[in-house]
Length: 206
Image (tube, rainbow, N blue to C red; front, side):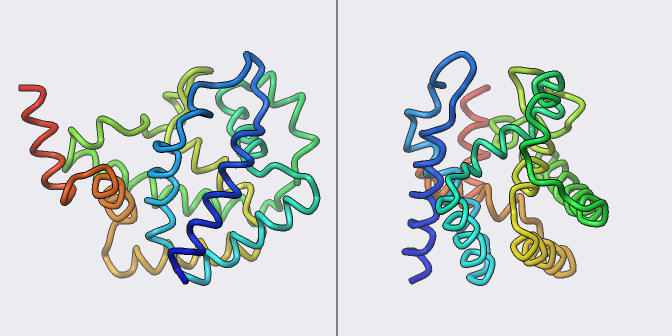
């Protein structure tokens, strides 16, 4: 049941991703199902069932309205990566309350710290991921922080509140969500664990 739910979410997202219209034409990553699948599944494997169900409902509601949540995510990221283009698009995006934006930033701060800690401990695996901070953004490079900000901005209030509680629960348990997700990523990519992936990637650069 849980695996089926994750598969359904990824299928909807892929269909939306496939329909994203890029200014320079279709992006190469839009034809890379395998990478898309691994990256999205890695994330959702770490989520709670309640959070998965709420996000699936967001996607279903968006589909009913003809709204593309993946396009919305990229539009929100443009606030940092392409500010002039964002100014043209921003009035089409649902406005988020000031209180929600404050909460989003608190969650982003927690997750950025987790990613910093992960990269410090596992530099070879971490080096394959996005740059971490928004200040590293360019029109051709979207950081982990900016990507997360764009994604959180697309969630309904219900889904965001569930996500916020999910992150806080992990923090209070002394765990690291970045580790959980990236461990899923390397396992789906054929490694047994983060530790094995780190050792093998490290050997490859010596």
